[in-house]
Each structure stands twice: as C-alpha cells, then as structure tokens.
Length: 55
Image (cartoon, rainbow, N blue to C red; front, side):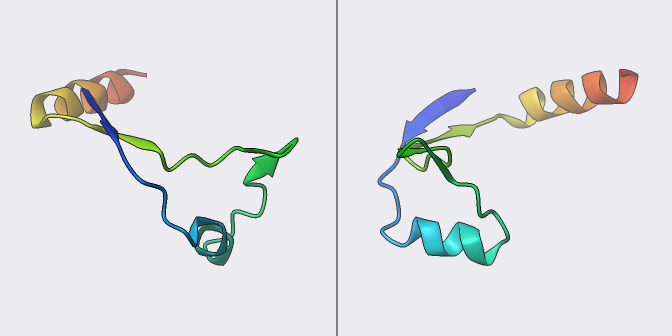
C-alpha cells in the first residue's frame, strides 16, 4: 500500500454533498479528507478480498 499526497479539490464540499454525504465536517474540522489517498497493488487487493470472503 502506498500513501499519496493530493491537493484537495476546491469544490470538494459541493461534490460530496451532491453524492449524499452531508456530514463532512465536525467541530470545524473536515471529516472528509482529500489531502491523501492510498494505492493498492493487485496482490494486496486480492489479499483483502480473500480475507473478506473468509469473514
């Protein structure tokens, strides 16, 4: 897994609200964070899928 730093979109609040997420900020701190994302390899995704199926 690799953590990637991103620049948040200027209209992120409007975008997530359009998708139905209206609770994106709590106590003036964003709950939704676009400053980073995670990239998984195909192998890592398969491992997660297999573990999920076992559950």
